[in-house]
Image (cartoon, rainbow, N blue to C red; front, side, top):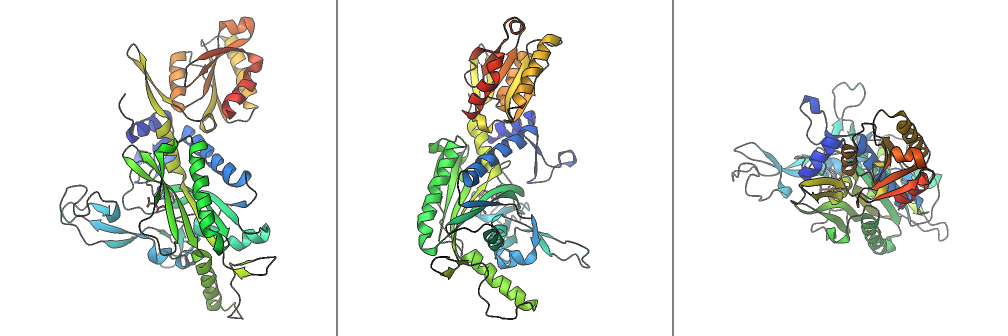
Length: 453
Ligand code: ATP
């Protein structure tokens, strides 16, 4: 079988309803995708795996869901308004615009090969908004380009609502928007995407220890929860550090055309809480609400035991959920030769991530008795609340198996004529295609075993 490519995933996503081109019927919009019935399930399951690991299985992390649109000042004081840009160059011959640091060869146009390239200029990545009935349409708000900043500005709110000793964290999953110069690689680089980010607040003397801890924890999550083999993942330290970072390491996954970033783990020191503390003070002086201009910092932490007051350091883990889904699909996608000129595509997902948990299939169509038994099994499985259950009533078992192999459904339950006699059904396993015959009454227990397996 030929090596799999991102195009195999693009085709499967469209064919089976995982991902569609955004605004498709009007010609699309670069860097925007719509998630279909199975895509939303897979995304949700990846999010849940992250939330379970980062929040429910720990006692030191709180959840947050901040607004996607925010006051301009947030992004002024975070440093994004002045500095969140990519170097844009243009080919003087064909007009192609490129992100200089991602070009194959910075002296030649990626499109036509011309060496006549403009000097780079800083291209602002944030999407500005003009909110409310402004007179001049000036930008007074931004769509957030990351979740992190909206976590920092809520640091005090969360800590006041749920006191914690350091270290503790705040986690968010949500949309982010960047006006990328050249969206590419399907959902790898989009203009609207989703992030799952943790900001972990630590004492400044413990930053290195927790940076290391989170690198190890996150890598293990990719292997154990998403099922990505360890040899397809690696750490890549940043060559050039951002001005706020003391250390930055990416987790990279080996995509078909090479290793690329899927998550960043950064030691951001006290940069963010520090600059918003400063920003807030400036804002209050400006707005004349601050009487004492020497008031103490707002986004700081007071140690209840020692009384020490300081701005914590931040260790950030920043994952792209869409990139995680792409990696998961690439890893799971398998083309199998079944002999006799037959082959199948199967998505060997971990059952916990599978969009459909089980499909119930009456062997023949238009046989009311078979359909009734199948519907009862379907209803019993729905009561387990383990996710999506489907009933197939087309009567074409081969087609049904093929469809569920491609969607990644771990198991199909077939109801046939023997079922009416002895109340047993066939379970057909996705990966091995092995079949087992079990009593109807044992189906829910067995499905639970498989899905939690
Ligand atoms: P890149 O260098 O690829 O532009 P970045 O280093 O700016 O990414 P971060 O700001 O650290 O990325 O964002 C954290 C994560 O969010 C990335 O590891 C990636 O998985 C995801 N991400 C960032 N930009 C995009 C995008 N345009 N489309 C999809 N996912 C993205």
